[in-house]
Length: 124
Image 1 (cartoon, rainbow, N blue to C red):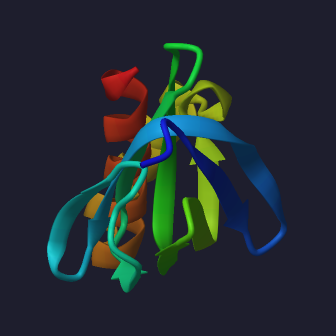
Image 2 (image 1 turned 180 degrees about the horizontal axis):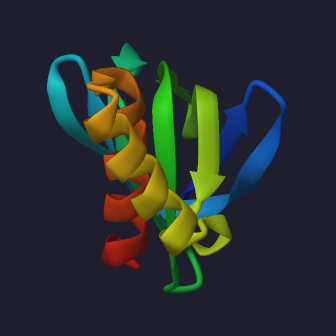
């Protein structure tokens, strides 16, 4: 079994993060999943939620991901997201304002996106 896996987190508009990791935790339509080196091949649908990447150098990368797919084979993990942003790129005040606007407009979809962004920030 390999000691690490190669991870690529890609949004529709850019590569968000790429590197070596020892563990990735993501939310799928079947529930949360943790992927480590040597995991069985998988293909799944991502739900909106934070993705946690434990890097090979002992660090942690957290991203807010909104929809997409997860694929793993041969110690290569691809997270192909509709929208993704690293937690340290998120403007907390802007996300809080977006959540308030979504609540007042009764926009559940926008509310979920804002909540995921805030959860990603608080998880760092």
